Image 1 (cartoon, rainbow, N blue to C red):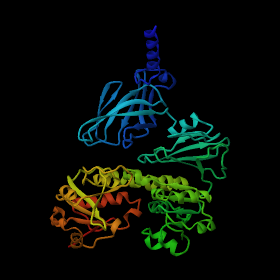
Image 2: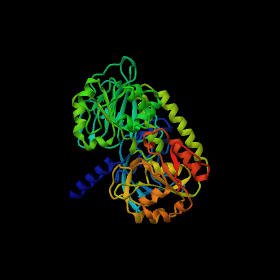
Image 3: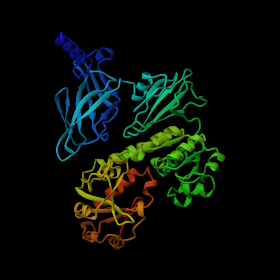
Length: 510
C-alpha cells in the first residue's frame, strides 16, 4: 500500500512538473510559423540576460526559442539533460536554440559559463511569452484586482486593453506597451527597471485622454509633463535634441555646470530655474513653479527621503536607469522614451536611427588589433577604470580596439560603472596599451602628458606615452549622451592615425 501511495505521489509530481519535451497542446493553440516573443531569464547571480524579444519557431515537432545571451562565456546549455552547444563565433555573444513546451510558464534550464576560473553550471528559469503579449500584460491578466506579493509586484490597468509592444532594439532597462480604452484613446504603459523594484507609469498619448478608472496604486499616472524638474544631467541632451527642452523648466544643475549650450542659454535667460541639487531640492520653488514631473538618476536612492517628499507633495518621480545599459546604443535608445513622454517620438527615432547607421558603418571596418586603456586618477591618487562590461568598453570595441583592463572583476557587484584598482594592477595590464585615454569627466581635464605623469609617475613607462598616443576625453562628454557615433568615429580615427580634432577627444601634447 505504501509503495502504491509513493508511486502515485511521484507520478503526480512528474505530471505537474515543467518539461520541455512534454508537448502539451501549446502547438494546437498557435499556428505553425516563426514569431518574435518576449523572453524572461531569471536565476543565477542576476547579471546575465538574454535578448528580448527572441525568435520562436512553432512547428509540428514542437517549439524552439533562439536565445542570445548578454555574454560570450556560455559554451553549452542543458535542457532535460540534453546538451545544446553554443552556435555563435568565438567573440560573439553566446547563442542557443533550445526546445520548450509551454508559453507563459517558467521552465528550468542550465547554462555552463566559462567566465570564472573553472567552468560552472548555473541553474536558470526561462519564460517565453505568447506571441503578441508581454511580461507586463501577463502580470495584468494574472491579477486584475491589483495585489502585491513579496518579490512579485502585480499591476492592474483597469479596463484598458493591450494593443501593442513598443519595439526596442538595444535598451534593456525600460519597456513600453500601448493600451487603449473603450473609445480608442491611447496610453503608453512604461516600465522602468528589470528587477523587483520596477517603476510603472501610464502616459496618455491621445489628446484629451483622461485617467482611466481601476489602475492600481503602484502605477504613476503622468497627466502633464510640461514643468519638469530635471536632475539627471544625461537626459538634457536627449530632450534638447528632440526639441522638447521647453518642457524642462527646473534644473538640478546650475547654469555654469551645463555643457549643453541650449540648457545654459535658457537658464541664463531665466526660462529654466535652478531648483536645487538632487539631495536638497527647493520644494517651495518646485511647487510655486507648478512642477508636475521630476526625472532623477539613481543617486536619489542615497537620499530616499527626498524622493518620498517629492511624491508626498504631488510631484511624480521617475528614476532613469540609462547608465545601467551595457550597450551604448541601449543607453542612447532611452531617447525614444523621452520622445514618448514629450510627444516627440518621430524626432527621437530619427536621431536614434541616424546614430545606429553611423555606428553600423564603422562596425563594417576591420578591427585594428590595438589596445586602449581608459582611466582617470582620483584625488587620492587611485586609478579609476571602467568595468569591462561597461558601455564605454563596448564603444572602444565598436571602434575597432580592445579595452584594457578587461580581466579585473569588481570587488562588489553594483550598477556603478567605474571601479578603483591599484597602480600595480593598472601597470601590469595597460603598460603595453597602444592608446591611453584619460577620463577628464571626473577630476577635470589634463592639459599635457607632463601634467599627467606628475599625477602618476609610472605612466612614463607606458608604451602609449613613449609613442605619443595619449588623449583626453573632454570634460563635458557624459552630458552629451547622444554622441555615441561621434565617440566611436573619433576613436576609430585615433586608431588609424587620422584624428586631428573632435568634439569628444583632445590629443595631449608634451
